[in-house]
Image 1 (cartoon, rainbow, N blue to C red):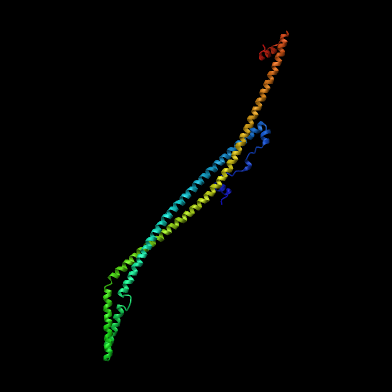
Image 2 (image 1 turned 90 degrees about the vertical axis):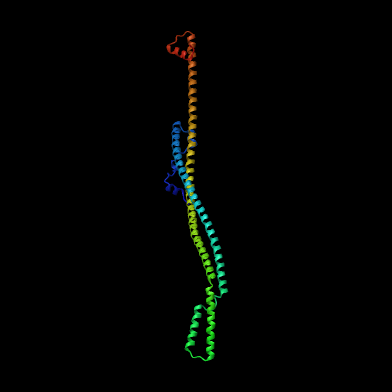
Amino acid sequence: MVTKDEVIEQYDIEAMDEADNVDLSEDDLENGSKGQLIKRAGQLRDRRNELNQMASERASKRDDLNAKTREKVDEAQEHREKRDELNEQVQEHKDKRNELNAEANELFDEVEELKQDMELGSGKSIEELESEIEDLEFRQQTEVLDAEDERELIEKIDEKRENLAEKKEKVDDTSELDDLVEEAEEVRSEASQHHQKVTELADKAQEHHNQMIEAYREADDIRDEADEMHELFVEAQEAADQHHEDFVRVQKRLRELDKEEERERKDERAEKREEEKEEAEEIYQKFKEGETLDTEDLMKLQKTGLL
């Protein structure tokens, strides 16, 4: 099983160092000065962008790996289909081979039956009979025999000559047997050709089966790498999301501080206006009482609308 470290090294991607992440505590958020929060917001934004870039690179690598996984699965499926197609052809040739072998067996059985009918498979051969006759005739010609032995010898020679004639007659009439043997051998030869195709196609089917298994194995390996890359993507994306969330919290806090400052400035302006109004009323009262006003007093009265 591939590990995250192996995937990082293999695909040359930047490892996420948690030490580079930016932390934001509630105390920092609530009690930090505006300047500190502005600095922290910048740090969070920069780290968020780095992590988003890291997550994007990892997502791209993951998608590439998933695409390669699909390619390997498609390749395996092609080998599966080719294997199944070849196995169908193997079965067709097996059926034809078995059919032809059965037919050849029947023909060879007919050959044996015909041989038995013709008695070609029993008794002595033509060559043996001719040799025996020749030996007996030589004996008749070279030996001195009494009448009885001479008669028995002649009877043996005649008997063997009859057997030889019958044998030769049967042999001369074996055209049907020869044709049957030839047909049986042709059928057997055709069956052998189909058997050869069975062997060839079965070997090819096995090759595609092996390639299918290898493609599925490679697909599993790449899928494991894609899964690890996805975990690395999630790791970077979650960290980026956390930094973005913290960045938004700081921005919200800064807006709150801006509003607080604006309220303070408004209160200060209102307080100042109230003080100026009270001072102007005092000056106006002096004016009504007949006191002489200088230029600055007149300007204060004019500013507050009392003059």
